[in-house]
Image (tube, rainbow, N blue to C red; front, side):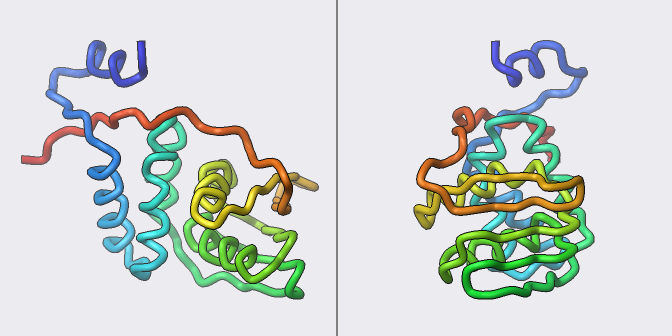
Amino acid sequence: MSWIDEFLADGPEYVAEARSVQDIQDLLLRAGLGVKLPLDIAADFAGMAALLMSDPSLFAMAVAALEGPHLPVRVEGTLEHKVIDGASIVMAAPQLSAAFVDGATRVVLHGLAWPQLLWPLLLRIEQVYGFASQVSRPDAHTVMVSKTATGMARLAAPQPVPLIPLA
């Protein structure tokens, strides 16, 4: 039995509707714009909807990560090796993508909030740009992402997300 079947069978007394990938993508985009993210960053984050819907924990983390704070990131380094300091996953995502597109082979993220969301983010980068990557954690506050020939493990297929109708 899938998690949605269990949720709907054991859930509270309200009626929940299962939402499609497109519905969730639209909701994530609106949520991103609602917390004043730039359109391109909100759209990039919403583009991960299908990956986030594969696991209820990832989806819950993504929604929590959207709450912020969303401060600008600081990017330093050479063309091949970039360092992103003090970034939330939402604000670091476009910088990470851009670094790989620009030719970086390694990106180091210091003080990254919500590092668990790197998995769907890196899978999304692989889908869109074709760059496979691997992650290592030299210490509790540092995540190192490197290009590699083999990609990360795949996530499950997206599952409908139950949401309470607002009207």
